[in-house]
Image 1 (cartoon, rainbow, N blue to C red):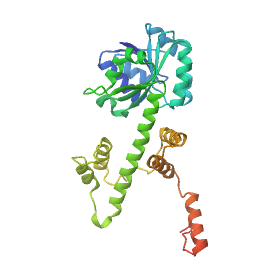
Image 2 (image 1 turned 45 degrees about the horizontal axis):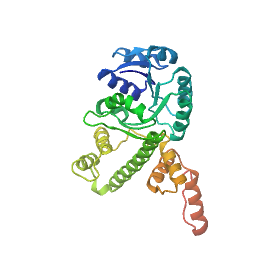
Image 3 (image 1 turned 90 degrees about the vertical axis):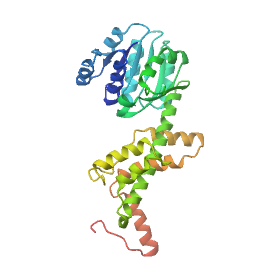
Image 4 (image 1 turned 135 degrees about the vertical axis):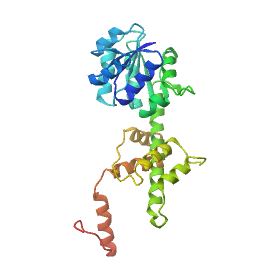
Length: 303
């Protein structure tokens, strides 16, 4: 199958390479010419612009967009809708907000272009392991492009799932990422508690490795933790500053909108916010109140 790929960051590049390895013909475009060069070397065809990309694809066309959520996705999708024709398929595999995907699907539909939103999990390991996909949109469009999803999925399973109408693929991925936040925070707190018990002098890497074998808390996240602890037993080379992609925020927003409690996901998101603060004012307010009502000792900023 011949398709276009827009957005050749690490993940998009790995997805393209996996498609090429499975015999698909891929035309690639990205403003970063180095990223394009590396995939042309592996057998992809080069496009110099979005219009050139569309020109090189025979109808009906399929284009996979793999760019960051926000204005760049909005502009790319709008430009492609103007260039594509009836019967073409546009797939957004990035971490877009599901509400935006619903709106974009409606916009594309006005030109009789099918828009699929694909929640994509697997990160930079997807080239080797395959990607877990949850896809929303027109079912016929999904079926027409199933060979693409099959190629991107893990070799030993379908690894992809049609989940429902437009927006549902990105909604499912949003909840997936919220769960991920909670799991990561639980592991982080557990290992911090182990390290804090200094008189036991725990070997964190050995315990993590032990837990990967038969334990009820074994997981791929734990496997990754083992690998990092093997390299740096106390992770002294890292900062505790943790970013968020935005999907955790959207998951918390959904819990409020739906009236469904999600305390673990919410707390995990709040901890990421806290990780980025140095000497936050909130802590100073707490100290001031304790001193005010009870005369408790406080530490001055110069201490």
